[in-house]
Image 1: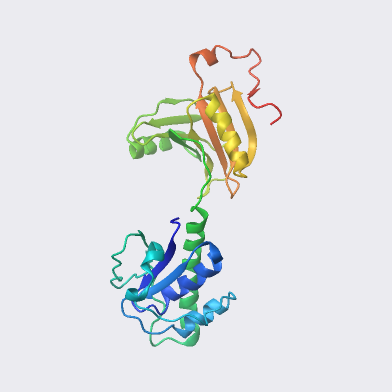
Image 2: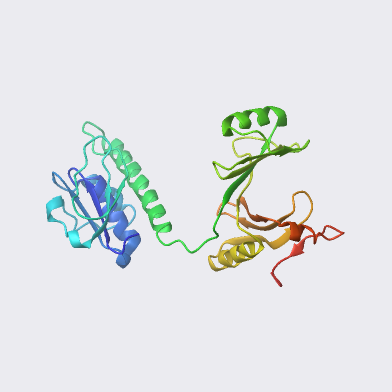
Length: 285
């Protein structure tokens, strides 16, 4: 996020950009300046005021403004909200984002139909602003060299054929339980594995992950996760059964399993213990 403020633009500065201004002021408070304007300003739509009031957002001081009247020195990011129309041009230096939101102000609707359209626009803008805020200052994370995903499948052979076609690579290896695809072009390591009788549906995901450089990077990712208040499920360890890896297991906000892993060097593989029990990498973790 720019240190300067936000400017929301639509044509009449009546509905969408007014909704965005009110929502952004409520979300950011004193952290960020917020303005809105239009190329052909008219008036603040009463339905915009009403649906913002439903969230406790006051709009008494809101008015429609021309894009020529805004404080350009205070603008760091411009967000245009037009969907069907040509959005106003902004000639100043700023980051530009486009969020196409359907115009909620449609003639000939009942009061309830209009309110429903304005609520839908309000909620779409609010969700986008929440993401904008969430990713504005992301703490340092691990440096990934590869993305990993594993999914369960019903028919290992049929799925192997499909994903060989989809990814454009032949499997790197396979057993009776899994098939592994590695695509250097996509920087992806993808595994399909048998379902073990589990019900499969659109949420068939087994886990996601990223590859990092080495053992030290896995340990570093653990400390970064702790400092970022990310849920650690299994602390850093070296596992020897199956594919030997240095690994760390996290959970995303929805409880999905996330693996951060590094492949072992030949020298590290030579240290494989006889009992194949995991070797923990951080004391007291």
